[in-house]
Length: 451
Image 1: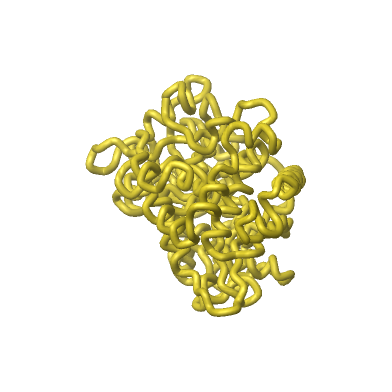
Image 2: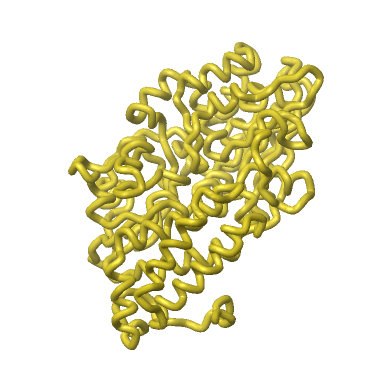
């Protein structure tokens, strides 16, 4: 059984409330940090831990904190990115729903380390139950003296506010999130300047994911070096994985980084194998924006070594034979699923969610969606595959924010690894709606206007 740090007490009755959370050791890290450590000490422990951003980018958290500018007399902010919008990812929502105080405790410790007196939790607007849960947890923490003026008599003061998002995937990008938080349209900003220098209201700001912030609690409680002992090499600690698709036991799992992918899929401790006795066909390992890999490449690297659930092992081979850890949205596809249909579905999402600020993304996602619609519905030609490849290539790396890349990578990987399936659709147009690859065609208002 793997070690857990964030979900250890998930099944304790009443853990959502302050009293039970406190009885299980909650808020010890706040007492330790505020009473016995300096802000720099806290940053140093996070650096020692090797914690990497759990929202998708995987950038070292302590290093990100150390970049924060500290001009005299200028406010600093911590903003928690709880705008969990990546298809296939639901671990942050799970954490906020069941153990909200883990996030609040992490917010206090992290805000202290950064010298922030006001911090925000930006939650996806559709998550109204989680917004109410967090607001209740904040009120409970404040009533107990862990928020507000002069916390625990240490002289440190902090207020935390929950801000509902606008229901836009683009606001998961940190600068678009800051624009939205300021009351503006959620368009990504051109960088530099980076948020660490000029973020919220033009002040130095750190934006971290829910899981990243919650992970600071065990790091401060046990020490950064102890946390770094969990995992493998530069992939330290534990990671929350949202497992979905055609597995027997979908859900949120906390793994020690380094678990073999094969074990994660097939062991009874985690996903329990592929449902209905089917064979594994492919996996999207880190949410919809990362490259899909066929079964043989997700279980082993190109060199034949077992593929591990780590940042490095998943990325082994680059995008030719590897993928990314991403946000941990692990989607497994069985042998009956259609890669073309899945790719079309993802592309529809990215076309709809593009903010339209950059021409390659605004126009390119629309072109990809139209071409994939044609191929999926038996209307494509052989040249459409090459056109699709060309369009995605002209999007990647040519936009202000990573949404363009997120839209291009799944398309490129699907063609790279499953080109024969695209060709099958083109060569068998009359069978494309009766094939045994996936769901039958259904009327969809989003595509009725496609030429």
